[in-house]
Image (cartoon, rainbow, N blue to C red; front, side):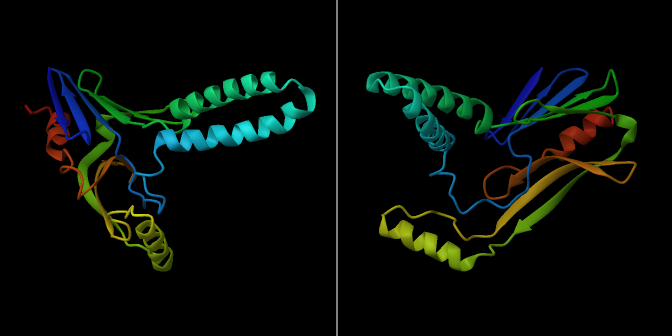
Length: 207
């Protein structure tokens, strides 16, 4: 078995008749102006938990008149909401593509909030494995300049804000004319898409 980890952008585990591809970079989409370095999963979970506590307080204050009991209940609600949001809503999600030569299929598992979306595609329906490119130029320039100005005033400049974003994508082209994108990594942050490893595996060649 061989395990390749490419700067955490994706990983490939190869066995005799299986290749398992995992990545947390599978969507080519514009990054929000709310910088990921500020709005981390923990901070976003804390904001959501705080909002839940505010709503809960509006109800609790009408039915519970013991101040200490209110604080205990709200604390428990905050902890439960924070842990739940961090685990199920704002957690880092990964796509998995399990290529199996024995069955002649690839099982693509896409993460969802509640349950994963699983699709099984026969190799016979894959016409090609191809790379592509996506580029997103900033649109709201005035908004970006405003955010940069506020950030500089607080001594916390946001690097890369306002820059164009470029992605390298890896897709399975199907015989029915559709495609399944299984990788979309930023060119400035990660390695090239592993097109040769997957293509050679499907074609039953040695990697």
